[in-house]
Length: 508
Image (cartoon, rainbow, N blue to C red; front, side):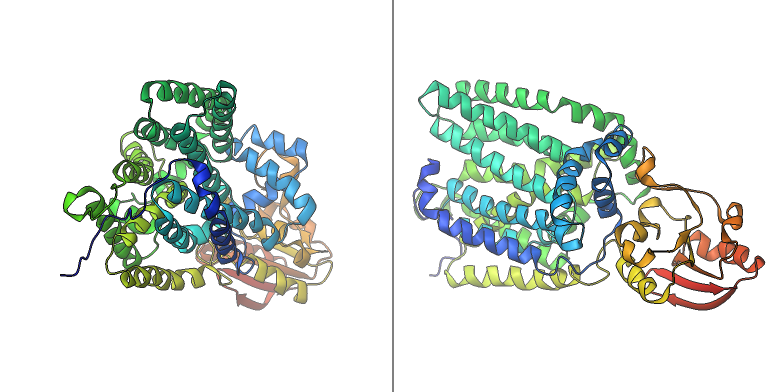
């Protein structure tokens, strides 16, 4: 009779990190694959609001950036500083600013494979690397100028270092001190890159408790190193608490259900999520139900740690949102994507006969493909951001001396004026008549403006005005700006809806 499930462990697990040296070329190839998948087409979508915050903050002078961080976005300060230096070298194009994320995904893919090799075996490692590289959450953050991809990479390699320390326990005290110090610094760096990586500390504690041969001594050493790392990161926790109003917008969003989290947190569509969770369930059954252990040791402790990594941070944020204050966003749990991929890989490796494993991996890739392609279209970001396309039109149609009026009635991260800062080529020579102070000169993320009715004197001598409105915005419905211009003698010459931006040309 055909066996449909078997323990995914089909070769002895060698605990030492050195046992993975022969696996290094495979890990490098998987990392290269992860990088290529994420970087391909990353330059196609127009920037969106969160990326605008990244790029515009990074383009500030350092004094201006530090003043801003004293009021807002301090938790992202390390990433903005990194991006500041990166842009100085590589520029601020979509490809340039998203490239660090794609590189980080490459390293995270390799790290996921290395960790799976350490915890289970080579087959699971290869499958985990392949699955991680194509997960919709991974391919999204790999093509975005935000810190989540770098934080995910740091999270993976921090766990790799921790597992190496507790499973090998170097005999030389100096070497142990160096390794625990490195772990503490990784915890610190991860927190500065993305505050929510601290949610993984309980998972680290579980790994130490389950993997160490000398549990008490290892737990004491880990606790000291973790405490030191968190202490060094205490400024970012302080800033995060002080600027917690930044995520108050989560309270205005519909509550995230467990079903929404299970589908959209990593997998994107119900179909892919259903397959992934079914494979995870198969892995759990094959690991914890004795009748399926055909040979070898079932990786129970290892899978427990992986499941804790995938589920505990999500549970904490969902519970905190219900009991304390809104703190959950699907993107915040990107740092758990490696665990999701590894759990899926354990399930795939448990399938029998072997050809079903190949079919399962191919099916995961096939179900992820439509979402991947959709992520790399012109208007893929934030429900249709079209700022580059608007700038391209103005670069062709506008002339020096024309004026531009921006819709200020939407939330700041969706205002069309951000197109002027992200894609300045289309706005050269245009007069921003509503500008009060540039974002470079204020201790905040965005420009400050005045109403158009108070800026009419700035239109003296101007014969053409370009008005940029968001589709469905309050200003679009009210038509106040158009009305003010018409009272000044302007008439609508043309109007074009790009995607979510209405570009209206008025002439005197």
